[in-house]
Image (cartoon, rainbow, N blue to C red; front, side, top):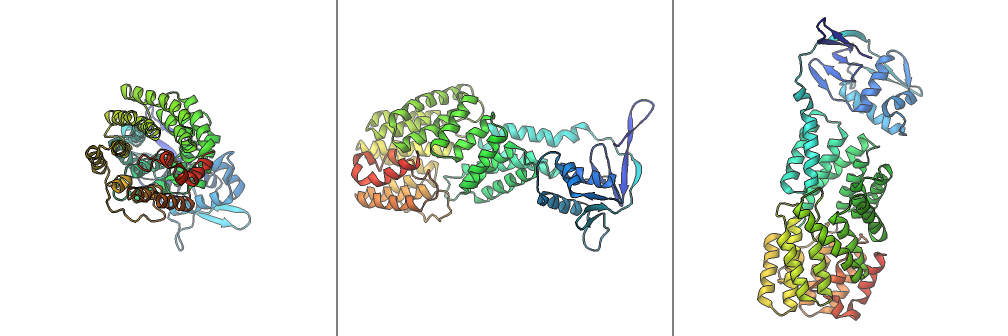
Length: 486
């Protein structure tokens, strides 16, 4: 271990380091310097380099290096190979340059450069400067829980700042991945989704999981990002891995519920509520499955508790605020032809909306759309059209409101996350033209093509299609939606 050089008055003046080429390696901290510039290494890279330098000139087996880099965590040769490749790049080792780390075929690796001990004296660094990136990380993580657009923007900047100082700091990659995923979600009702943010979300989430495979948060965020990207099987696998690593963390259970469907979603949402009572979003996730099954009375029981939780969080804001519970209750009421109750529920949703929340525009637009549908069915056409216009003013990419107003619908590509919304909007346009059988057939065809098992879950309570009014026409599509939700 490296030793600090102590003056008589007890102040540190320098540290014993191991020198090779232009580099100085501090054995006590694992920090590597080139002159006054720190060379950033991940924890496994630093541990591997320390083991090699400590045995300079000798062959160190791969097993020994894996043990140094990952302790008792099981990793394959590929993890060592990748870390070794990155470590060599950090040392500037390229073809024709100085060779620090040699590969000894079928044996391991050898540190080939000569190593000397010296004392590194460095200018006193402010503790504030040293801790600043990590303070930024803590603030960024706190901002994410608030789920407001401004906070998400600040969090992205904070995590980017951390990664500039600590490029291999896994939690910052995870945080940035989650922030970018939320930024994509916030753009869902724009004319075009922010696909660049989603690409960054997947990249950083993957990097976080690769840097720290024991981090449940890394796998949990990766699950969320992959789900948004349409990679649902891998998303579910990552979510289950997160829960296996840390089963008592409610966030992992909530994300598992989000990326799952049917019984798995309900079980995970129930677990999240057990670990964190009053979590409005968990009630919302449970209700979606019950709605898909056509279990309206059971859904209303869940939504009653969910609406109370949503109202409580408005009085005392906490982490991961939920919304849309009143809206979902209104949709169920509309399906039961309780149109005045449906309208009141939508108005309640609008009154509780926090305009700065990540999902606020989507939820507000949906509430205006549902209110418009209720008024249209009450033959209050002027109020209906006004509500549909409000939906489109709030969210220009609201496809169902555009269909309700007879507006042209954009062509949605097969990999667009709004595929189910586009199918619903197309059916609405046909139904508004009086072509109800064609609407049902078009939606049935879309269900067969859409990969997500949750696709079309809204059908039993879609307020303009109002499938309950024409049960024979919609029977086949409803049966598929119900069967997938089991």
